Image (cartoon, each protein chain N blue to C red):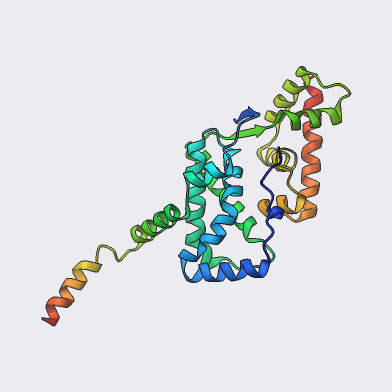
Length: 190
Length: 55
């Protein structure tokens, strides 16, 4: 099943988007095209991180209300508008976890899980699957986020960097370290 | 601690669109703006006093 998270899948011209942002900064009613473009991606980002669908809708709604409240502060300095929204989503999500309104969840497709395991072992077994799931639980939250975005959501390093506030290179290095850590935990569970 | 969900079914784009729309978000934003406005308690009394002074 193709994942529909990627910011790069959006095929709008930046100049068109810039005009839409400027109009929305003048009048919030003109935020509609931006909402239409990013709502689904933001919803799915949130949905995969909480256990209940209704909470995902609530958090998505507060992401867009927050975006409307602070769009006047948005200035294009190399950070794409979509990434700016994802950062708001990330902050809203973690606020919900702190307030215990939502349960931190990691949604994984079994096919992806199998692909990860097959890179490390010759044969994929149900036991390996359980070991990998246990190893994931030993990771630090930031490492888990990187693994989640890179492998389970198939995001590029540029996107990961934009969302986490890292450079592309730094995102690459940190993800590589997180994978090494995961691999270490995975082999420790033998 | 987090929960792991395997092969979770995601709602399709159409269902998501039906569940939430921009007008709801805009209404929530307008309400927030109204609630966050520090003048909201003073607006009508001040307006009434001004009208009375004018009369």
